[in-house]
Amino acid sequence: MQTPLCQKCAWSESLCQSCAAKRNSGAMSDLDIEVSRILYKVNELHNITAAQFSHALDLGDAVLVFTPGEAGLLIGRGGKVVSALSAALGKRVRIVSQAGDARKSLEDLLTPAKILGINESFHAGATRLSIRLAKADEKLLRIDVRKLEPLVSEWMGKPAVFVFE
Image (cartoon, rainbow, N blue to C red):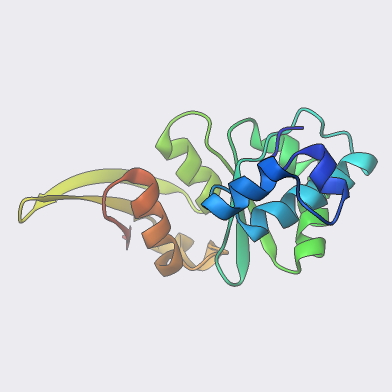
């Protein structure tokens, strides 16, 4: 399994020099350490050795877990892995795959809502992304889109706005 935390540190309370350096430099957060340790424990029950985990973000009421590989491995058969993560963290967990294009990643993040389109608009010399969603899907979203806008803006490298039509 590939995580920001080495296997030795996942099973001990202290961090090795390499992992401590990652943490001190900001390349790995406390949440990343916690999620990595939980995943190593879950790996004992459910074989997720092929899973990859890059980083996690806390949105307050939910945690986003990013994977450079296949999201299905971290979701698990019947959602068992993501349920174990959610129970251990005490929050809802969304698995987001960074493999492929940005639209696919956004669809993973916003499921079950459907993306109608992603438009790039030019206003006052700046570029802005408008992510269009159906008005009826607004109540299906499990994460507040206003909390997601800064995250998506940073992720895409451009200011992003969610628009419900």
